[in-house]
Picture 1 (cartoon, one colour):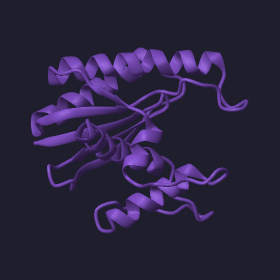
Picture 2: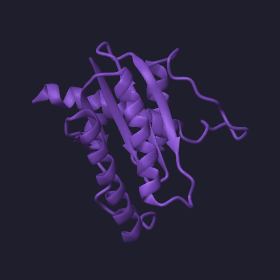
Picture 3: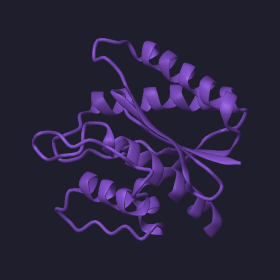
Length: 174
């Protein structure tokens, strides 16, 4: 049985499928064109979920809980509303594809249960990519840009893995 982890934003969706032994079976990112309507993005997401459903039987699908608070000038009410709307679409697609409601996972809780500590002011995205790379040295590959950073979307892939692993651990805590 497999576990699916999703990191959903309106521009990209990180997708991870993990085996029962926590091995990575799928680690990818769907990138959407900025001129696409949310409904078009949801259709692409639905098609990918249908493809995954043909090959994997998840015992659970975990989705990183969307942001609930403003992040110091980075997030507007309009952006948060768009994210909530798209997250709802994707949650329904997961429900209809896998015949099971997805489980929302708080990002901080997932990191905590996995022992990932991020100091105040530290680059969380970089830290998470480093953690996943350390845990999955052979199975989590990515390219480095000419500026020395992981290629765009790598952090979304890493967040999907953290969401899946953290979701399972949090469920086991209960």
